[in-house]
Amino acid sequence: MALPKGTTMHFTSEQRLDDAVLEREFTLGEIPGILWTPASASAPAPLILLSPPPLGLRKTYPRLVARARHAAADGFATATIELPGSGDRPHWPGAEQARADLRRAMEAGEPVSDEIIDALILPLVDKSVPEWQAALDALLPLPEIGGPVGYSGGVISIGTRLAVVEPRISAAVLFAGSFVPRAMFEEARQVTIPLHLLLQWDDEGNDRQAALDLFDAFGSKEKTLHANMGGHTGVPQSAGDEAGRFLARHLK
Image (cartoon, rainbow, N blue to C red; front, top):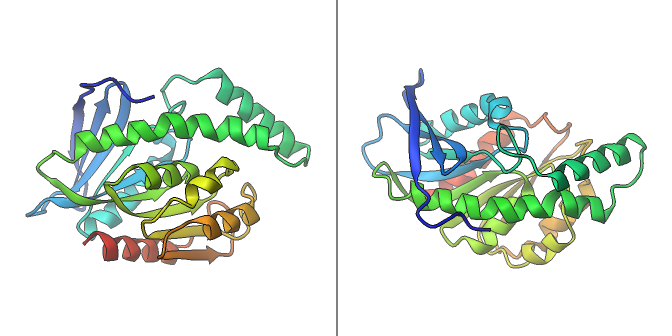
C-alpha cells in the first residue's frame, strides 16, 4: 500500500561526522530514516539507497554508517529508512507468527516451508517497496542530491521488486542472505538493470542453492556474482570495496 499523498519529510537532527560527512535524521510520515551527504560536495551527489536488514536502524547503525562513509568518500549521498515491523515501528501479528514458525523449524533441523517463507517475506516486500519509492520522491528534489540512483543491501526480495518497478534505480548491489519466496523468481526475470550479487558461501541462515538459482533467473544482461567463504556476518572488506566500484562505474 502506498503512503498517503502529501507525505512529507522532516529533518529532526543534524551532525557532522569526523570525516566531513553530514548526517541528518529524518521522518517520512511516521517512518524514521537517515541521510548522509558529503559535506564538501560542490555539486549534487548521486544517491545510493542503503537497505538495512530487518533488525532495526539502532542495531544496524554501525554497519550502515561505515558504508555511508565509504560511499561519501567516493562522492555519493546515501539514505536509509526503517523497514516495516523493525525498530520502533509497529509490528504486525503475521510477521511475528512467521518468525516464530521459522525459529521452530530451524531449531528442529527441519526444512523451512514455502508457506513460512511467503508469510515472512512477501508482506515485507509489499509494505517496503512503496515506502522506498516515497523516500525517493522526497530525497531527489533536495538540492544536494542528484541522479542517478543505486540500491545496496538486503532483504534481497525487496531489492528485486524495486529493480522491477522503480525506473529511477540504475544499478543494484544485492545481498544474498535471506529466504526467497518462489514468486520472486518470476519477478527476477523482469530485472534488466546491472546487478552485483554478494553471496556468503557458508551463510548458516541462507539457502545457497536458492541464491544461485535467483542469480540465474535475473534477466539483466550485466550481472556479477561475488561469492566468499564465511558465514552471514563475515563479508570481507574486499567484497564491499568491489561492490563500491561496481556502483561507481554505473552511477558516475
